[in-house]
Amino acid sequence: MKRTIIPFGPQHPVLPEPIHLTLTVEDEIITEAVPALGFVHRGLEQLADLRDFRQMVQVVERVCGICSMMHAMCYAQGIEGLMEVEVPPRAKYLRVIWSELHRMHSHLLWLGLFADSFGFESLFMQFWRIREKILNIQEATTGNRIIVSVNVIGGVRKDLSPDQIRWMLSELIEVEQMIMNLGPTLFDDYTVKKRTVDKGILSGEKAMELGTAGPTLRGSGVSQDMRTLGYAALNELDFTPVTEKNGDCWSRCKVRFLETLQSIDLVRQAIARIPNGEINTKVKGRPDGEIIARVEQPRGEVFYYIKANGKKNLDRLRIRTPTFANIPALLTMLPGMWLSDVPVVVLSIDPCISCTER
Amino acid sequence: MLHFDCGSCNGCDIETLACLTPVYDIERFGVINVGNPMHADILLVTGTVNPRNKKVLVNLYDQMPNPKVVVAIGSCGLSGGIFKDAYNVLGGIDKVIPVDVYVPGCPAKPEAIIDGVVMALKKYEVIKKKHSDSVPSRMKWRKIAP
Amino acid sequence: MLEEVIPVTPEILSGETAKIKYEGYKFITLSCVEMDANNVEILYHFDRDLQLKHFRLAVPKKTIIPSISPIYMAAFLVENEIQDLFAIRFSGLVIDFNRTLYLEDEIKNTPFCKYTVVESDSREISSPPDFDE
Image (cartoon, rainbow over all chains, first blue to last red; front, side, top):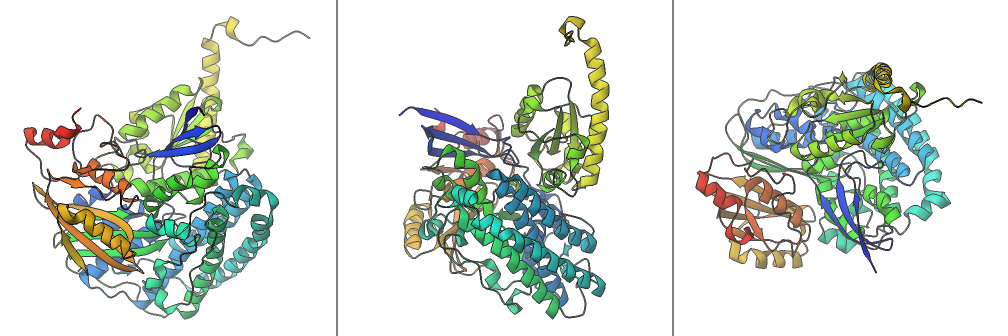
């Protein structure tokens, strides 16, 4: 069979971000995929030499615009761990509320893009219409639509008023209803099943071996979720990680869909139990030592290694983002797929390239 | 309209995409998102430029037919923004290709992006007129008599 | 403040990694830290049931480190990244981008090294003999 090499990306209609894949195809079946990265590489980790450890909160938020809240939270938790700062309980609950709102908007975004990847334009529009409601909540409570920038070292910057909480709950009821209405379209539709079931299969053992994270891993039947570590106030809330067995695109889609509903539930629980009190503490001194912080992002586990030496600037800040862990899995999923399934399989890991390259 | 993410953090890209969806709906101004640079008149660029995506950006810009306008979106696209001091960042979009409209914000709000695109459309009309005046008349489309 | 850190040397690295894989650990990532002008420290992070385990490898910059990507395939990305940013070489990579994962060909400096290296030294680091051809 004659081999053909087809470039995929960096500018591709289905991808909002630049990643390049060199696909080797025989007939229409892919035999090999090699990635080329570096289109979004900015060298953000090195900014730790120039900015002090408080200013770095704003920098790590810009690792990725979609999950900016989680990046800042993870970084702040790391520094708080180093400096042995106890965050007030209300701040912990507020962090949970905003991070779960962020997860919801990220998953809704992904569900829309995923629908778009197999050409279901109207479903894409529907999901993004719901997402605007979440963004409205974020804008009303924090002042910005995407990069919410609520975290500071030692707590959060903004508080929720009782009025806002009441309005948020009524909005969430509407959001939940709208998501539930779209469920049957996404999971019972013949065309959607045809395009997603048994595509890009990744078994549980293989996923563990490749070090995948997040919904990609949970879609293969492995119940691993960093939220079970109980950071912020999550140890006081009830939830069980969502898992699906099949490990194909459909399972990963289902995991994300159910997690969106789970996040609504977590926000409600957090609102029901939120205590009154301070929202941040004064932090004095400078961090010293090395620490690892782990937080569950919409795409999986984010891993921060922070090394400080008692100076204003950090010694080393290392960020391992979930997509970085999922790219090897993508490379093993692609061989054997039809060329026309590439967009669906690539999107099924929820690639976030600006996370990957930083 | 063609959208290319140069090196942004996704914030501006997602806001650009949000412009296409029902709440903002940029299509009411007659703008449609295309995947092929050869079909595009307006180039929306978000994010900073680095040595690698510079080549892609220039390539995309060259492939677009004349006349064309470029809209730079977000603080990073304007000057490099928060990443200005990072080692792999050359600066704003205007270091590489000429920019017609600048949309500030980190991330730029959809309203601002729509405003920028509408400004670009006006500018496009002006450039198009100039362009068609400069082209020799025999190369213009002739009206076929009925 | 890291619990369970095992110091390793380049010679026993592959063996230890294979052992830890057999024990059911999941590969997370590598963190490279520049210690001083000539030495770096690489931390290997592994996880089993949310419990972390680390290897600490302290080597001079010129050492060619055996890659663990034949054992954990997922390591090839991060090892290529370290090659890019610290100019440390790994041998036996599954996919070797040869210092062009993030950076373009013409860039030969090492952005993450704070210490400036002597001219002759830097040339030696950026093109060791076995990659010269």
